[in-house]
Length: 462
Image (tube, rainbow, N blue to C red; front, side, top):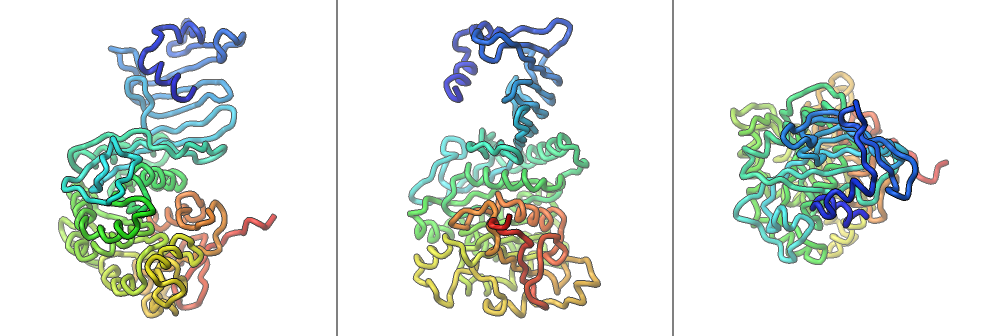
């Protein structure tokens, strides 16, 4: 039903037989309104479907902005955009009977990995390799945001390819503006770019789906446009090969940032997960050449407002060595760490350092034990008298996620896009520019240091 029937309709199989079977009839005097029998010839009752909006006069098909309503229990009330009768992103829909709500949105993709952006969207290459030519595309992703969550969502439905960022960036900006117009949000031209750098066991589609789920749950403000930077990753069994191949793709992220600045983006945010941390750390010297230093404005260079690491898979010493350089280019540095992260523990075993002092940075949550005390420490009196989250005393935060157990898998490594507490916190940080001390759902764990934890209720409390 979910595969063969849509394919038959799309390819015109059986001609007008579908209209005959469903007993489809147009309602006289009501343009765009039809009635049909939900079970075809096996049903006595009739239901209504209606489309109101822009239509291609040459084909008579919905084309442009419009609204669709089907009043059956599993029917949808949808507002969004159509291309020759096919609903496309952005769109906002509610299932009539269950009140489950879905959002279809667009995410820009810049990829220098070996997999083809269209033909191998869900595939891996066992041997990671970077392309000489970068691929650009826009992915349309449908996500559940409330009510009954469908098991097949989020789903990356299709990718439209472009020759360069010059073609991709305006399209992403346009669809961000359209989405927020549908949601009734204030109109704002996207001037900031949020770039998601995924981990290593992640095909292109999975990265777009996870990122879109976070964006739809967080209701990221309309001045932020979303992009995925997809680097040469692979499957879990190829961890060493992936990690060792990271230097081969160096320069792709910094060139992407440079290109976004040329397309009018004045501010950039980096959201980095797992082994993507080592991709970013490797590019710090290159990023220093394409973004403005903190406290300065260089013509043609965007500012890096936030640099955020989720479950960072990188050796502690290497991360600490680069913290001063990261603070030199990033307005705010944040690490969401979890000492119970199972994937990072396996990484420590694979790298020969379980239970040692050379821990993976993403499992560390105590600034005093990480060597970050002198960096993370801040003056509490200054915090109380200033709302500037980019002040020198308030630019590095560590968020301890170990107590979080709602919508968290047993591995505790990839829950940041599904846990609404973390999603809301990221939206405050990236979309509204608030440091941890100003965010509503965080509490300071130790006076004088930027170590925070979430205000959250455990699952066992009833």
